[in-house]
Amino acid sequence: MSLDEKTRTELEAAAFRRLVEHLRQRTDVQNIDLMNLAGFCRNCLSNWYQEAAQARGIDMPKDEARETVYGMPYDVWKEKYQTEASEAQKEAFKTSHPGH
Image 1 (cartoon, one colour):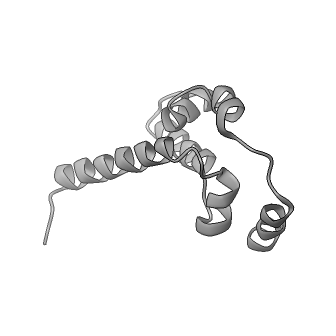
Image 2 (cartoon, rainbow, N blue to C red; image 1 turned 45 degrees about the horizontal axis):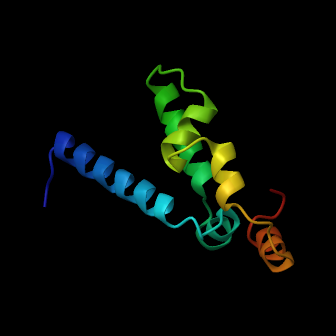
């Protein structure tokens, strides 16, 4: 199947919005879990969003990009949902992302 550029972009945007909504609903999944299993987290996604904006000449602060992904200010999300990483999570992170 061949899609025109506009349709492809619309489908990609819809998939992005669905991913962001899914991550907003899954507040039980910590960023360290995402990093350990998938190699990216909500912060990575917000960084990519910010970089895409900057590539188009849009000055987007990091906090604004994070709020787009988290659905609220990052500090609020951390206070409400972020838990302390377990030793097992920290060890898995060291193994999956050495030097990070």
